[in-house]
Length: 233
Ligand SMILES: *Cc1c(COP(=O)(O)O)cnc(C)c1O
Image (cartoon, rainbow, N blue to C red; front, side, top):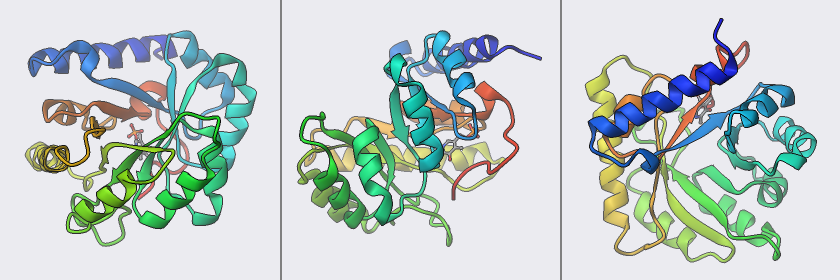
């Protein structure tokens, strides 16, 4: 079995290779280590390899790890479904939220972000494959929602996050990622803080980087298979 350090090295090399293939700077893609279902000890071991940014889906589990690992000064990203009555601990404990898909949630995060904290970085989740049960705003809703969220205090709208449909069709995945990149470009003239495409997971990070991803969210390829939920929908 590969050690955690070896897995991190392999994924970092894969990202570097993907960047080289697309003539992108090696530091233009950030690795977000998705640590949902992983113990605090595993996160600590990952931090020992130099990893600083970690993504969590389940609030209670995340808060426990954030507290235990407080000494490490890690950067925590919330990437899971958000219930509107659970926004306060998210606003208080995370540096980024990738899964905002409605105004009400953004308004609550804005008003609950502590005054002493830096602005909360937000990505708007877009239901790029227009799947029935999937989280994310529609492409049609996106322009208005983005401008309303960008105007809120204590929040910095950084970009878009997508999870395309599960498929082995790499060309289809690439077209979804390309469309996401186009959507970001269309919004950028009006919202200058937009610089982030949060797209690509263990199975599709090559395609995502080829289409401009700036943050890839990787769990399985770093930590091995999970025994409970694989991803939120
Ligand atoms: C679980 C999850 C990931 C990581 O998925 P892997 O396939 O394990 O790399 C990325 N993004 C979101 C939103 C997730 O829920």
